[in-house]
Length: 212
Image (cartoon, rainbow, N blue to C red; front, top):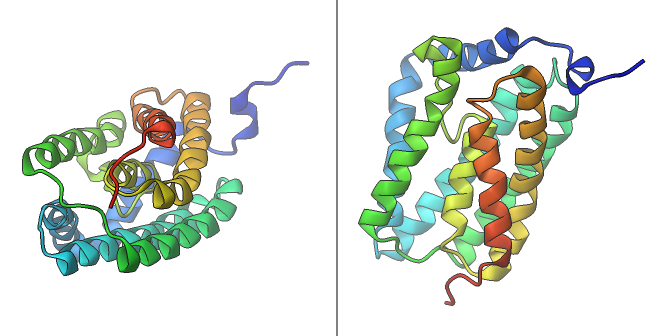
């Protein structure tokens, strides 16, 4: 008797995609203010004022905490038990990000480079909605784990190697886990997000990066 990855999952692709709709429905009237806050972070990372970039990292840290508490613990963990452990890992990642923001925030990012990154991330956030055939299933960074991990990995390109090594492990392991989950569900389009995250994490692990 043979098994494949799908046999270890207790939910269907439809149930999984519905999680994103439920999350966005939960936000209600706060959805658009949250979107504006998310879009403000890249702009803040371009500022030369140190306190602005520190605040941006604090907001990223908050996104990891919200993702762990709201999406992972409340919605995803009940149907996929390993996610409950990942939720704790996301909470730890949030604390490490907070420490980095206070200690050595990333250097100012060039506006053009940030604009390209934001465009790519926005495009990738639509992949779950495309698969669900419902724009209400959009996956936003700071609210959903794959996009949160990928967006943070983009941020880590601008931090010192010491902080990057500390912060790479959780996004990398999560992205690998998520790739397997999407593969098992046959959701190849949304799988692009964690696959890109895993690849970027591996590149960043060997990239020297900036020196402060």
